[in-house]
Image (cartoon, rainbow, N blue to C red):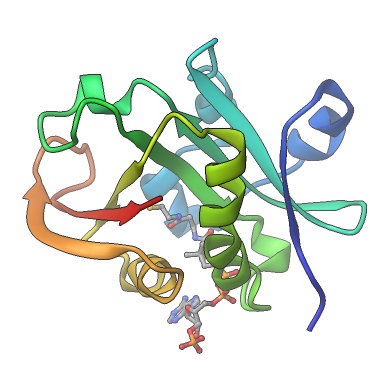
Length: 157
Ligand SMILES: CC(C)(COP(=O)(O)OP(=O)(O)OC[C@H]1O[C@@H](n2cnc3c(N)ncnc32)[C@H](O)[C@@H]1OP(=O)(O)O)[C@@H](O)C(=O)NCCC(=O)NCCS
């Protein structure tokens, strides 16, 4: 099985990132690429999941997550808008990317020791990937999402 690589997104990735999308029925879980990209600022950082020179997936790391959500400790990262492009789903990329996330974050964000995410209760395949990659379900629900209740998950870094 081929290795994947997680990288901070640079302008060189933009042409490929602009072409990324999920299936129509998955848009409610992450939004469109256009909607995701407007969230980026100096505290919310875009990342790409690479297979060689091909961008196969994307996610945001939110460094203010712990200050935005009551359920997260104040010095926590947040994983947001994690997805694999529809053309590359079902090939094990998400599983490998989540498994690689901890080592990447420990190196890239040494000041943080926790990461949180929320995943829609109607999205069991994504929850399964996160569990496989080392996230733990807190067994609390976040009810503030537009598409219904979400499991709150976390991982110690
Ligand atoms: C969820 C998502 C990231 C999975 O990506 P992927 O690369 O296709 O997943 P993988 O190929 O790595 O599969 C990982 C595991 O999930 C399972 N899985 C993946 N998609 C599945 C589906 N649609 N239905 C059931 N199981 C699924 C696989 O069987 C595998 O489990 P296994 O190792 O026990 O066999 C992808 O479907 C996606 O981007 N969805 C839309 C965006 C989204 O929902 N993001 C999460 C927001 S919190």
